Image 1 (cartoon, rainbow, N blue to C red):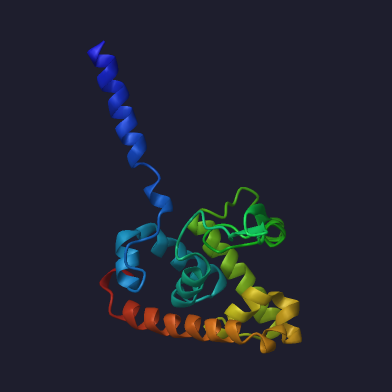
Image 2 (cartoon, rainbow, N blue to C red):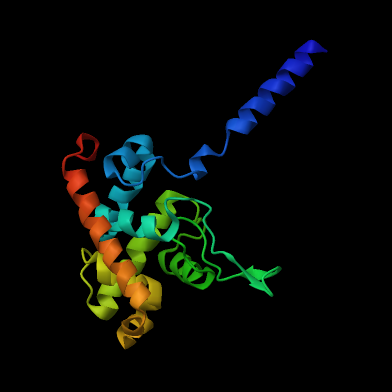
Length: 195
C-alpha cells in the first residue's frame, strides 16, 4: 500500500508543477531574459521573421501589449450592475489575443487547421500573417510597430478609415508599443542567444 501511496504522491507532485509553460517569463522588460528563459519563443519569433518578414522585436512588443506573454490570456468579464457576469468583452484569446473570426480566417488562409492560440509558434505565425496583410492592404512597413499595432487593434478596415485618430488612449498605447519595440531591438542586438 505504501508503494501505491508513494506513486500517487509523486504523480500529484508532478501535476502540481505542470502548467508552467503557460505562465509568462519572469522579466518582461528584458528581451534577452525572455528568450533565455523560453528558448522556444525565440525559435517561434525567428520562424515568423523568416516566413513573413516581421522583425522579432515588433512581434515581442505586440505580444507584450496584447497578453504580457500569457498563453491563456483572455479579455475581462463584463458585468451588469457590477455583479452579474455577462460574458467576456470579446473572443480574444492567447498570446496574440486573436479574435475567433480572425483566427478562423488565418487558419483557412494558411491551411494551418490545427493551429492553437495558446501555442507561441502559432500565435507568432498568426501575427506575421496579419501584419503582412496590414502591409498589403494599408502599406504599413513590417518594422513600423506603432502603425502595425494600430491596424492590429482596429482591424484593416478600421485602420484605413482612421478610427484610431479619436482614441487618445489607443494612440498612447501604440506609442508605448513602439517604444518597447525599440527597447527590445536594442537589447536583442547585445544578446548572445539572439545571434
